[in-house]
Image 1 (cartoon, one colour):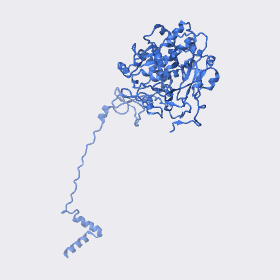
Image 2 (cartoon, helix red, strand yellow):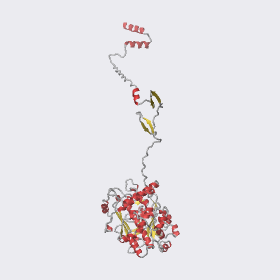
Image 3 (cartoon, rainbow, N blue to C red):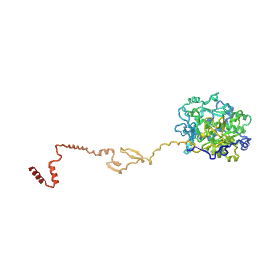
Image 4 (cartoon, rainbow, N blue to C red):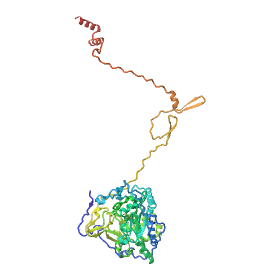
Length: 570
């Protein structure tokens, strides 16, 4: 079976024809022209309503900084309720750790042992390799989907929310470059980042979970978000472009960490390597990015100025934001060396923070408000920059390298422990050579299994009828059971004095006993004794012998008698 198909006409040297091989830098003038930066119109953030309970529990947080997070938390709540429950229901509405779960088998047919081996838990059970997309199953009816959404929402609000705490961390970004982190156990005040998420610590906290309740977790968010927003407010720029972009990225970071938390809330997910499964057809092992991409139609918001470039500089998003393409087996058979990016217009983000836009949106909020409609063409399988979007002047474009240089050569970008689904696109590469394209049989996504149907209940084809039993009582008998033919019974009315006896065909049980004839006597027949042959006794008498000889010779008995007399005289 062929696994990898080499592109015809490949050659050594600089690649110029394969999609995703040509880099393109951001053009600042193009960003201004497409409305990604440089806007001067005041934009008020005025969302109102309830913050979802899963985002409501903040501890050890300065009240002023917590106040700056009000609008990001409201936006995260709106997006979660409008577009996030289908993805979350695949975790919370189904038992993903059950033995019969369809996602326990590896989906890549050419996986190396390190890719295909599932990490065992303490009990020896294997965690799922893939989260199956039940919500997209062809047999999932609207009623069944609604039941899953309600179950996921109930668990999110009722079970998970009391066990999830949020903190603003001032050390995480300067020390590690992280803007968010999901800690798989409660974090006590003063605990260093290096001490978080050790296997023994998680096990010790899991031992306190009673009755299969969710794992208690602390989710860290970089304090730089709220600090920068507070600084801009003090400068009178709370309606400016940078404040808007910072609030949006804070909301995206909160949603990203929730994508990790819905998997790790189950204590059965613990493994030595703390590995996560793939979701659906995703090619990258990162549940936070997967959740965010599902919200925005296959795109992930990222800063145009990468977070790694903020070291030693002010934390800000003045360079603008962009959509980064997510890779899925639904559309992609090749990992591009340079990932396509499209700028996010400031007007799009401003609409998300407007209560009037949410009130005026149609029923399908994912399509009308959350998902970028102008990028639908590029989300359907294009590798590299889409020519139609490039010519539309709606988005500035860039192709950013998805690999980096190490001491041993060029290596694909990925987080530690987060593997790429196709091993050929993981590890090292040569940027000057064409890449092999995966054939359609490389990945076989696990399909959700339909629920077991109850056994059919046998029902009578016709209404129940009654029949007279031998003892005179009426007993129901369904007509669906065939009965042998009966002799026709005639109703006979017999007058006995002043009393009218009605006989319903035949006699009653007492009359039957009176009129019943006694059984015939049993006659035993004696057995004939067998005749035993004796040597001193002939089997036939002399007279019988004479009769037989007379008939045989055709002479009379007298003549035969004279013959015997003559023989004796001689």
